[in-house]
Image (cartoon, one colour):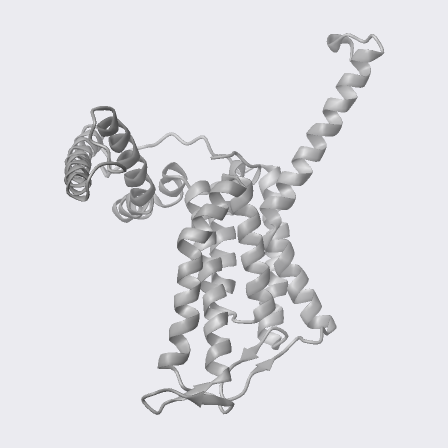
Length: 313
């Protein structure tokens, strides 16, 4: 996992960002909005996890989901007036259902990619910091549930590596031996998960989690930098919502395809631009931070070349 600038901001900004971008992506089905969301999600995922890991995850998981969603929608939904043909059971095969299936495929891909970024940025300590006092039990359950799959996968890799060292690899040998070794690894993993749950419960009980009046230490502080960022996020998101309310980014797929904002109008251009800035905010912050540090480094190097000592600068 690579560290980025936006992850160092206050957890409130992190969760508001993901709530806003996911909300617009799921409820606004305009192709340009979904395209902006998907490209921004891939860009941020590449920044967080590197392009190799992002590409591998998208090809293995996201691409099949997109293909299935795009293929199944016209088979089960037959709305629309532009009939391209008829299925063997007699149901019409319409252009509107095909286009809507593609739109849903891009929406699913964007949502999945954004959630992969969410798991990297919103750690369990951030989530418990935000909701631990209001809903301590639910916040803990949600935090553990969101981190369960990646934590489970990492531990499975550790166990598989250990079993491979003693000759119990799942990548070689006969099919029966590989299945046997896989069952052994899965059994070890389940045992580890149960023991870890018991240890976690005992540790929390000893530390008084959930007790009335219990205090908790937090390293997060809302400072001026967070305030400026929150104002920028609020302004961009308000412009997007305004454009959606005014119908600048509206899109209909039944009974005919009707896409507002294309060709671009001043209102749709502002809405699309605001959403692009909102989605690309983590990348913009990271780029500006790197440029700032690069300039400061060049300034320090230049002064050192002129013979200044650091304590005299």
